[in-house]
Image (cartoon, rainbow, N blue to C red):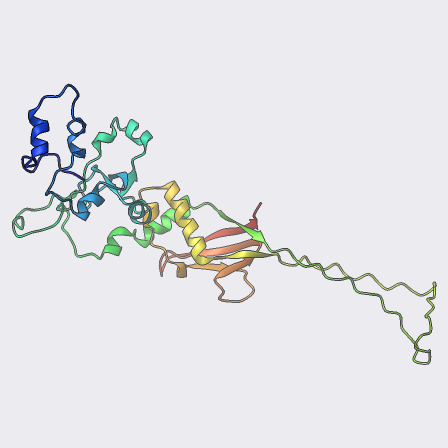
Length: 293
């Protein structure tokens, strides 16, 4: 990206002639915006180029190394999708969102890499805090996640009673019907034809078999269930839904064939227990695996 000012006057004779002699048509170089005019001897760093690329987002809190709350900057889509948006730290600035805030794309600024970084010159400067509560030494995980009690409240109030997964069923191979066997006397010749008695009692019909379980392509694991739980909570409460303190070990599936198994391999309805804390009562929900249309 070129700078917005000339670094030094031109020294090329051809350039000096074009600048000294008036022309009826403006120079194509001078007609370009200053931001697009190239100058010699000035180079931009890779970090400066990255700050001007990406998607526009609006910070919902102070982000060290990026900017203050409500600042609109450009970041990489992966950072927004995997970190900031699930934790409610920033929001996407779509065209509709710009109109709702009464802003235009000219409001997009540049990332402030020095924001929040302490140096020897500003050690005496006290950072501005949202609350006057004393700062305690908390880990990054404890700061981002909600307490187990608050997570339990969100599960009980916002999580729907049934979580549905769609999977493609595996077609079952039909079994060949059994061939009826007629008792054969050992005294008969090997090629002798057997006669059937019409008065022989017909065999009793077999009891109807229970429908076999329909296997599926791609099982439903506890990790899949946890991801859907986070998605439902995030849709219901964007500010806190992505900060619930849940792990895959806290999700237990009931009614499986093998005890201790952590994935569903067939169609059906199953009950799951979701534990938010060690001493808290688990939340019961239903997981339904249906055939994909």
